[in-house]
Length: 229
Image 1 (cartoon, rainbow, N blue to C red):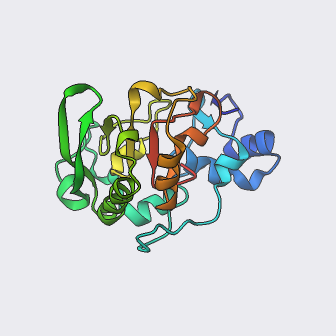
Image 2: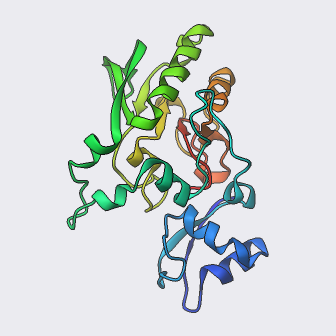
């Protein structure tokens, strides 16, 4: 099961990779999974996520139906593909207004989505990374064409600058490369009730489903366009 670990005196990511995976060479992967750019810059008390080996190592690159580029694997590829959101964070920890015009764009939806936090309102467009406009457009067109509109009961957000709900590293929402669907009945740590047909549509376009994550980190509302992070 996934677990959170607080570094102790003498711990290094190399030693932790050896302890948890019996493979010291996975230290770099462990760093990337936790958004740590330099594996040598860790400190006593720092809390990191220790995922299963399968989740850490990811899998073969998946090419989305849009055929634009493979699903990024690990923090390095996320930055290479979508840009460095951290370079737009100010000294006060807030995101500078330069990120949105640099990286984000709006996607028109084939039907309005009800907001999960206010069912009296809906949206006809979502804000995502500009490199995923074609991909998100294809996802919702495929959902519509398959007669699966009813499986998307509410929309929980796409771009949102914030840390991951189960940790301190930046959420993939901060890049605008993740989307939450039906949050009310798919809370973190639960099995949820996401329709498997909907999951397969997102997978066919290169998304990773949070419902595949083990233990308390399971997040069935969440779909992200990367692995290994």
